[in-house]
Each structure stands twice: as structure tokens, then as C-alpha cells.
Amino acid sequence: MTRKIVIDPVTRVEGHGKVTIHLDDTGNVAQSRLHIVEFRGFERFVQGRPYWEAPVLVQRLCGICPVSHHLAAAKAMDVVVGAGTGDGLTPTAEKIRRLMHYGQIFQSHSLHFFHLASPDLLFGYDADPATRNVIGVALANRELATQAVLMRKYGQEVIAATAGKKIHGTGAIPGGVNKSLTAEERDRLLKGDGGPLNADQMVAWSQGALAFFKDYYKKHKAFIDGFSKFPSNHLCLVRKDGALDLYHGVLRAVDADGKRILDDVDCQDYLRHFREEVKSWSYMKFPYLKKLGPEKGWYRVGPLARLNVADFIPTPLAQKEFEAFKAATGGKPNDMCMLTHWARLIEVLHAAEKMRELLRDPDVLGGDLVVRGQRRPEGVGIIEAPRGTLFHHYAVGDDDLIQMANLIVSTTNNNEPMNRAVHCVATTYMAGQKEITEPMMNAVEVAIRAYDPCLSCATHAYGQMPLEVTLVDAAGAVVARRRRDRT
Amino acid sequence: MGVALVEELEAWATAEGIPGLVFDSNYQLNAEDALAVAESRQVVFVDAAKEGPAPFEFRPLAPQKEISFSTHAMPPESVLALADELYGARPPAWILAIRGEVWEPNEPPTAAALSHLAAAREFLQGWLRKPG
Image (tube, rainbow over all chains, first blue to last red; front, top):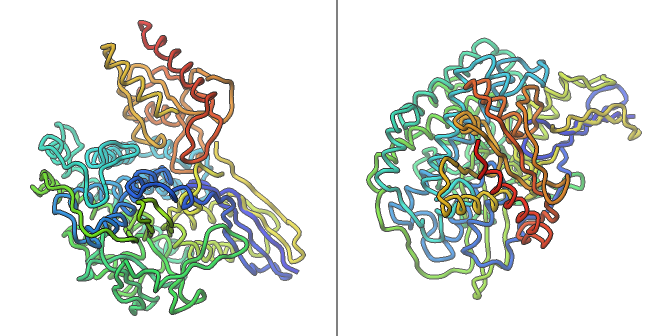
């Protein structure tokens, strides 16, 4: 007879998570599942719309990473309008889009670390959730909290300057962009208005955040290294020379030993290499590499995967941190779930360096914004969103209306890893238990939160869904249930 | 509807030449909004509401430090608390909750929702014209 534990909802995760843990007759964890319980199918809402509307419409998918969807859709539509497959834009258009994207990475990663992860690090995983939050961070470490606010604000200002506005931006259009920067906008972002909101300060604060995490890691190494650690494949885009490139590249995957299992595939060919499995207990699909099948072909995406796949980081300060990160595992892929935070902060530093580099480039002031060529019936746009690889694929009819849309979002790519992470934690904390305690809830949340999932995005649903954990026995009877609602 | 109202009010304030008003919109509230709150003398949060009275509800807000948020977004009370903690700012704040009806993507607002929006706009224009 097995028993089952359910955790619902997952707090500080965008969307609604429901966790069910089945125990066997001896009280050991037999199976753990992260269910996604809401589905609204966003793809159908873009069908029948003119293709040029897609980069704006898809931003409604998510309030956290609208820019990633905006850019992925624009990249797909670049192909449709004959503007090449990622390398055909004008220098100004590509650099403005990259600036927008690094602004998004910077503000999203900063939000995750300071707002969602740092409370766990500052107060411990067992602390009362009423104080283990960003207000608690403000009370305990005003400097950290103030920097977090300003880093978020800076990223948002970069987005507003490149996308036209903070909400429902229109900056990226099929074949290019509809604006570049004015010299005033460039100077304000590069040098600030006499205050701290300038590119150099963002680089310095990013280094400070990394130092904060590395200090924490030094003091809690045993916990961090052991928490929810499991081997996996890793996938991301890389530049053709193997550099970390969050905007464009080829698809590369490595296995748990670092051996290449997907060798620099062109994004337009993704369908030949990926499949998605459907399981009856979740609306979120399970992507995998076709040649390895669903059992062996699943993979991680996101900051940890990216640093495991890329050969180097093309900015000097982040490269130095990357070398330390790689040295920690002797150059092998890092499979420690909590070190995703380290990888994320290295990417924050990389994004800050890239923004500064782009703002110093005169091309961002240019006037040659759009390229058009031979119209094509289909296009694929893939980008490294903050949470991982994001696929947008559209088919467009001769009438310019979208006939088909397929989106594989970052959180969906991380579906199997998040389930494995929950299973690791459940095996450690819940075997033999008859009730679900706050520390157990927290452990499950911490494991899921390392992936910074956006479940609204993954189910293509709107709004916020509340974590529920249920413990069920072998006969299907609920032994315990605990729910944490959003307030 | 919140974004629509803010855009309408911004155009109205510009046309009427009403000084001292700052308008902002985003997908959801977040930590950086604490800085905007701290820089303001009074704050009105505007959003569509799934529940509550029609056509709208206008009520004062207080900072709430004991929160248990579940997502990347922050409720307005937490933004106020963060402004208080980080910047020592506690401006008077209100929420204008405009009752919505249909929440599907690409669906235009219903006639009732548009009427709620118009009523909220008229109310807030009157409120903003008052001295103080």
C-alpha cells in the first residue's frame, strides 16, 4: 500500500503548483509529481491574427518575461518576412534587440535573486514565511534591498527605452525594430542622471550580489551541494563558437558527463530533434530529445544548464566568475540544483557587462532599422529567456494570418527536472511522515523555486494561480494535505 | 482596464494642463514601485477587479509588512511597506478597483465594463481636481 502527500500551492512561483507524493507500504517515497492544474491554451488565441501582431500579442502570456516572448515571436517573424534566420538584421536592429533582451535578463534575474531567493538565504529555509520575504530583507539588509530595487528599475528603464514602453512594448517588429536610442537615452542609461542608475554601477552591484552568494555558499556548502542534486542533460543556445549567447545561436545539449548529445543544431530544424510527451496528470508537457526518447532525452534549461553547455562567456568579469564556477566541479556539468542561483548571478553580471558594451556602441543610435526579403510560410524564433530556452514556431498563410503557433516555454522545458527535484526533496524530507510541516513545504518550494518557474507561462494561462501538497497512501487515501494560498 | 484608465487620465491631465501628476503602468506591481511611491505625495493604485462592488471601489490602503506572497508580483500594501522600510516614506494611498466581467485574451471590454471604466474615470478626474 502506498500513501500520497500533496503540496498546493507552491509559493513564490509564478502560477499554481500542486505536488502529490505517493508513499509505499513501508513509508518510503514511491513517486512524486508536480501537477499543473490550469490550462487555457494561448496558442489558439494568436491563430487567425495577422503575423505582425504576434510580437505584441504574445507579451500578454506573462507579466514577468513579456520581453522574451516579444523577441522570440519577432525572431520567428523575421524568418517569415525574409529577414534571415537570426543573422540578417541591420546592426542597429540586432543591437537594440540585444540591449532590450539583456535588460530583461538583468531585471528578471535580479528580481528572482533579491525578491524570491535572498529571503531563504538570509533567514533560512525554516523561517516563518511571514517574515521570510522581501520586506524582511528590507528590515534585515537595507543595502541589499535598496540595490535590488534600483537594479530592477534600471532593467525596466532599458526595456522602456528599447521597446518603446514598459508594458505592451512594440520595439521589435518583423525584420527589425521600430526605434533606436536617442543620444539622450543612451547617455542617461550609460552615465545616469547623477544618481546610481548607470551602467558602471549595475556592473559593480552585480559583483556585490555574486560576492553575497559566494559568501553564503562558503558557509553552507554541505547543504547547498547536497540539496536536490541529480544528474541530467543540459540544453541551451550557444554562439557558433561556443560562447554563451542569450539572444541567438545554435542549439546544443550535453549529457551529465559533458558529452555533446545535440551538436549545434540550426533553430529552424528544432522539430527534427525535439518531441513533447503528454502525461494524463499534468497540463504541462514533457519535452525531450527525440533521438534519446522520453526516458533519457529530458534535459534542464536555464542558468545552470547554460553555464554547463557554453564553452565560455564573452565578457571579461563574467568569464572570470564562470571559470570559478566550472572549477568547482572540475569542469564537469554542475548538477546541484541550488547552484542555479550562482549561475543566475553570473548571468546578471554578464548582462550588466553586455548592456554597458552595447550602450557604448554607436550602432544603437543608428537609423537603419528594418530588413525585408522573400516571404516564407513558416518561422521559428528561439531565445534564451531568463528561465531557459524559449521556442516560438508559427505558420503564416498567404493571407498573412497566423495558421499555427507552437510555443515551448522555458518552464515546460524544465518540467521533468522540476519533478525530479521535488522527488529528491520528498525522499529526503517526507519518507515515513504522516503530516506535512512548514519546513517540508519550504523544502519543496525551495527546490522548485531554484528553477524560477513561471507556471502561468508554461500553461499558456493568464493570471496567478495559488502550492498544495498532498500525501497519499497506496490505496489512494489522502494522509495529509497542506495548502499555502497567495494573500 | 487599469492600463486604459491610466492612459486616458494621462492624456486628460496633459490636455487640461494639470501639473504635479505622474502616471505609470506595468504588468504587475513590483519592488521598484516602492521607489515611485516614496517619491510621491499621494498614490492611487488602479486595476480591474474580479470581485467587489460595481462600477468601482475606492478605498484607502495601509502598508502591510507581514506578507505571504506567492508569486513574482507584489500587492500594493507590500509596495507601501517596502517604501516605508527602505525610504521612510508613508504617503497616503488608495486603490481604485474597477469591476471587470470577462477575462479572456483578445476579448474587448463588455459594455458594462466600459461603463464601469467611464464611471471610474469621472470619479478620479473629480478627485484629482480637488486641492490637497
